[in-house]
Image (cartoon, rainbow, N blue to C red; front, top):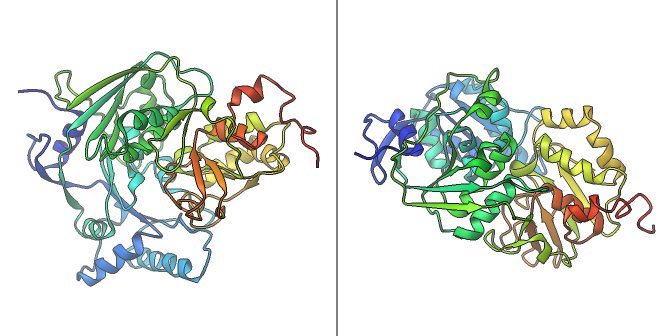
Amino acid sequence: MAGKTLAEKILAAHADSSDVRAGQIVEVSVDFCFGNDITAPLAIKTFKEAGFSKVFDPYRIALIPDHFTPNKDIASAMQVKAMRDFAREQGIPYFYEVGRVGIEHALLPEEGLVLPGEVIVGADSHTCTYGALGAFATGVGSTDLAAIMATGRTWFKVPSSIKVIFKGKLGPWLGGKDLILYTIGKLGVEGARYRALEFAGEVIENLSMADRFSLCNMAIEAGAKVGLIAPDEITKEYVKGIAKRPYYFYQSDPDAGYEAIYEWDVSSLEPLVAFPHIPENVHPVSEARNVVIDQVVIGSCTNGRIEDLRIAAMLFKGRRVHPRVRCLIFPATPRIYRQALEEGLLQIFVKAEAVVSPPTCGPCLGGHMGILAKGERAIATTNRNFVGRMGHPESEVFLSNPAVAAASAITGQITHPGEIMDHPTVGGEHAFSR
């Protein structure tokens, strides 16, 4: 009998049967679940209407008000109040107030609440981020979350797996964001629908955790159920000392069965940009250099980690945001915000005339802080660029890594970061008339 994939092994460890194969329906125990200020209030309402009175384990649930925080209006304040009250009723310790709340998909790994080998379910589609740790992590709807909060269990159809092997060595100004944009460009937004996308190869083995999170975060944009990277020493170094529970490292068997295997050499890859209005509309940055922009967003659950902010600061140091452009920077968690403050990154951003926000998902989903007007264009390190995603339905969003986004903020048009760093006078303190 053929060996098991990483996805099959994790689900088998959580199911009543160890013989778990792609295509089967299995009921599994859930290690951790969570919702945000859009999805959790409905889950709480459903939980109560169904007659449940007690959650299965208050230490296995998080309520994270990150989408409209700080609260933008009365409706969003009421959403968060429902979460706050439920957390107090149920004794859930992982409710995060403003000042402690971060963007959920950066906050939970940082807090050691999502771990290798686990089944993680969140009422948010980018829950697949935690596959970077070697966890089976996927998004569900609010009704499913209500049932999971009550029972600690759920069911899945076991996904078949697609293996993507990245060969070669990444060039300068490239990272996990470019790898996932390349993947989506190759497969399309439905190319991995309800599959487990398993990433491997020498490029992945040398990839930082920050870039692994960025890569797995957007697996859903290829339609995948999960994005997975087998845990290794880099994973171990990340989770040791912060893990709230025991964790387990699973690996795919050498003879595991895959629906497809792709091998791509990315040595000659240049930074990529996803054009409107779909993440698969991917082009090299050199094909976007004349695209004039109005707004730049650097942050989100995809690229709001300290490594991303350091890259942006490297480009902004001694330079200014173009006078035609507004630039918004969103550290993903309070810890990242404090670290950026201590390292002097925030001072660089403010001197460059960018705006630094507390952690929030606001601009990514067009919720608040950074809404685009009709006819405006933005380049963002976020994960989606659908019609109206960041504001007016006649606005446009381009997706990129933080280096491209920062370079573009400086020149006022989509720009390769090498053009800034190779020519120190470009975008300097006195480059633009005031």
